[in-house]
Image (cartoon, rainbow, N blue to C red; front, side, top):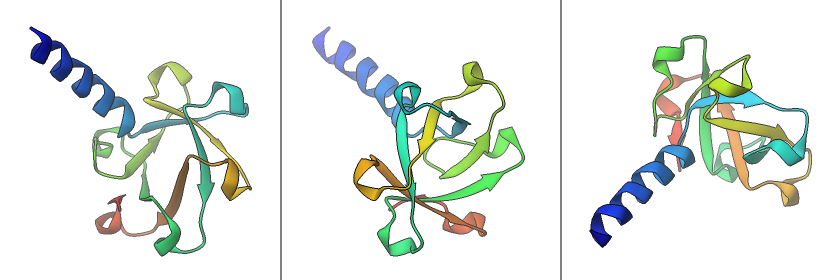
Length: 102
């Protein structure tokens, strides 16, 4: 029973960590992730490709779909201009094949 509960928690937690439907919020306090956009791929924790198609946004893919509605999003993100404030550093790429966690 204990193992079953642990597995359920890990699955739910894993889905939340690697979510790909994203909503940009104007308030740091309501964000799940505070994002700093890097200039260089080597500095990033995640390489992100932005898609126009919701169906392409899958877990563990690094392909983000921007949603207009907060309730649809897996992640609410706030962009900061300070690297020290961020809990995730991302680099936006033009190539879908580069997307993913580093």
